[in-house]
Image 1 (tube, rainbow, N blue to C red):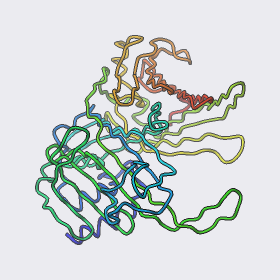
Image 2 (cartoon, rainbow, N blue to C red; image 1 turned 60 degrees about the vertical axis):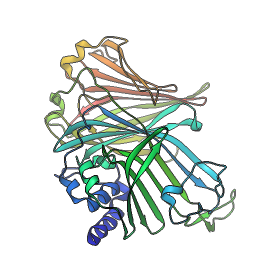
Image 3 (tube, rainbow, N blue to C red; image 1 turned 180 degrees about the horizontal axis):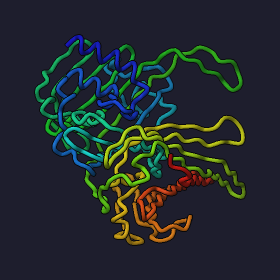
Image 4 (spheres, one colour; image 1 turned 180 degrees about the vertical axis):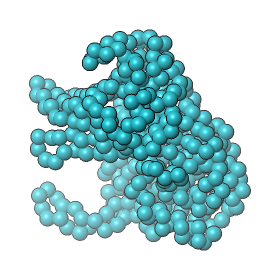
Length: 419
């Protein structure tokens, strides 16, 4: 077992910056540090099938938060940050100066004994209790037995013994979220100045809670335009708890890759980002390059590299990995044979946690004149429109509109090239 722990700690240090990355062309999906830990403790997970409740359309939502206290004071038990972290500003010893609350939403796109694809959406809850804003989407192929760290095969959880050695603690215990108490397995890992905690349902294998704590480390800060001076940094704590699990179905279902994607390597979308503040308007060129990394008959994994060229300073660039099937919201294509069943105003989904409503906005001519359908996701201050070609089902246009205080941001891109 000691060699397994060594494998985990070394590997975790290597892939810590690639959480959420896709699998590339490798036969085995890349693993996050959480999955590396689980596989080190339970090697059979590497070959396990997903739990029976994991099916396409399963959606799990977590409430998550992070805080960095102003002072380097710690909870009473300094060696157990993973279970003592708190976001209560009135708690003794804690003085948060920066904190955020949001949602993490996992959706299973494809679930087979030998292959699972997931999508993870991250939402910000403005001011902690305000509108919900979608801030990031990623996806990838994951080990069926670990689900990217969001579950673990319950049979393996039942077999692993309790222990406390080599920085790893495993205990069986009840775990309460809200008014519901679960029979659970808790895993805590400590490495140097950081502690991680994971709580899984012993019955289903679902991740119930995850938390982490990092002790204060040396840092630098300055006041105003003064010099940067050495100082003691602040601890950072995070917490993530299960909020809801549900299933939803997309009426158009799965289909094969559309013909334009079957031999494609890249898709280029070009357009603009427009920022309006009262009577002022700024228009900036924008583009998204989607590079296909691996694919099957009816699925694919790809990277999305976006770039917005600003008038001043370097371009704003981001890159994420995504996974896609036709039976999902916001994908690269939908089943063209079922587009004819869509009706304007048809409500496809309403998420009870995020408040986002998905509807068929229009059926008919798209901005470029071709026939198609527009699917829209609408929140309180944000709207995302996806326009699909009726003939191929391919995503042709995407527009994101969001209100941030007095500023309206509109990013619109159109498919320019398939290579």
